[in-house]
Structure formats: structure tokens, C-alpha cells
Image 1 (cartoon, rainbow, N blue to C red):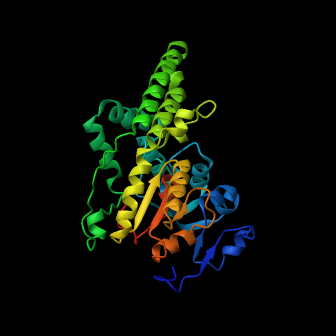
Image 2 (cartoon, one colour):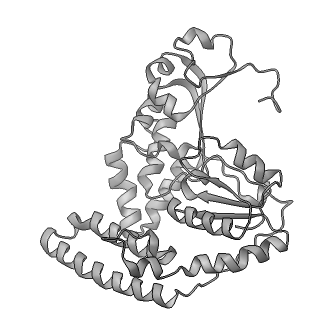
Image 3 (tube, rainbow, N blue to C red):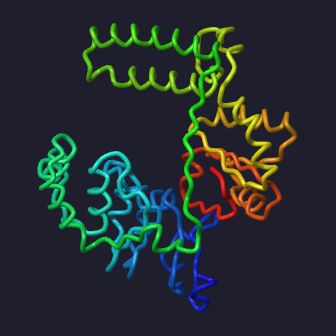
Length: 319
């Protein structure tokens, strides 16, 4: 706002001392707030007749049963806009949820939408229903492609690096795979497939953790094998991160597991490589971002969740 519309009066509805009455917004052209506060102050924000409501990172509204979604739907506005890079992450029901906040009724009720579009498209790959859905939402979507807005950047280069498990790590993985396979089979026989979903996901999680570093896997009594197995990924990073830094690269290293980031951080410390870290537990996001963007450090460790929302790290050239 300061850069593009300096004449606008911007009010931040944020923090412990935030306004408790609508009168506080009377002189503002723009009110900025967060999704958690939209939920907490739902009654206050719904009592105001807004001209425009803009939902940034609108995938936050993808769950029609969540309180944030209900609070967003309760807002009164002449126009609603959603900004998102991921209007659908898991299933078509999320697209319905966002549109049901923006243009209520456009896609019908959730039940009708599931019957008419979601199930035929997801379960039977029904191309005709897909085209009908696209035609229904097309007039309400403005999509920017990468080549339209980032023409000045060089093309993205992708390398796929296959990393073989360490021998001991491979042995542990195979032992774990055999154990969880037998365990899942017993659970399915007892409870049936539908009731075994959580069990199956937990088994897959353990196998993925074993591929990252066996120390991440929660095993009874902290298996000695897991502690000594080693990590092929950590070994790869130990070799290649110093090489990339010597080439003047600026690195982002992502992991879904914050515990894996902790092990990487431990390794970088041992190599005397400065870094910054951003996870869901980071209270001060600005400091690590500024240190990386300014060039003070050249390695940034990020969790997928914390690093995937509201973040542009233009200084990075390698992920």
C-alpha cells in the first residue's frame, strides 16, 4: 500500500491492543488482518458492510467445515476476491469451498457438486464433466502463468538426483517395511480397509522418515540399528552444500519434517556453515528472511508448511 497507493489510510487489525469496535475502522480505506483473527473476531468483522474483501492465500478456506471458512462466509461485502497459487491441493471439494465463499451458489450445494462433478471427475476421469466445470468457473478466474510475469528470469533447470540408501539404512528400511506390511495386513483383516487408513498412513510416514534419516523413526527403545544406520541424504548434503556455496549459490533446503531440519542444522554447524531456519515454531519470520535476502547467509532451512505460505525469496537460485 505504501508503495503503490500511498494516499490510502491502512489500518492493521492485529495484536492484543486491536480494536474491539467497528468505529475504529471508520477512517480507514483498507483494513489488514489475519485468518486466525478473522475467526476470533468473527462477530465484529461480520457486523461491517465491506466494499471489497480480499482473501490472500485463499487455500486457507479449502475446508468447508472449518471455523475460518464459516467466518469468511459470514462477511458481508459487495465484492469478494481470492488470491491463491493453489486453488486445489487434494480434491475438487476444496475448489468448491473457495468458490462458495466468493460466489455462493455458483457450483450448487456441496452434495450436488460431489454428484455432478467431483465423483465423476475424480473416480472416473470424466472429461465431459471436467469441461463443464471449467466452463462454469472460467468467467470468474484470472490465471497468471509463470511466463507472463517472470519473463526476465532465466529458465528453470531441474536435476533429479537419485540417492541410494546407505547399506545399514537400507537394511533398517527393509526390516521396517516387512514389519509394517505384516502389521497392516493384520489390521485390515481385523478392521477392514476403510477403518485402517490411519494405520496405513502411519506406516508410510515411518518408511518416508527412514529414507530421510532412521533417527526420525519412532521405534520402541530407540533402536540401536536406527541410531547407527546413517543417512544417505545427510551424506549427500555434507558433500554438495560446500561445493554449491563455493560456486556462489544461494540455497533453500526444504523438508516436511522439522526434526530432519534439526539434523541438517546440526550438520551445518559441524561444517561451520552459517544458515537461517524457518518452521512453524519461528515467531520472528522477518529476521531469517532478511538475513538470507541481504546475503548475510547463503543457506536457508525451511519446513514445507511454514515456507510454503506468503514467502518470496528472490535471492535464492538453488532449491
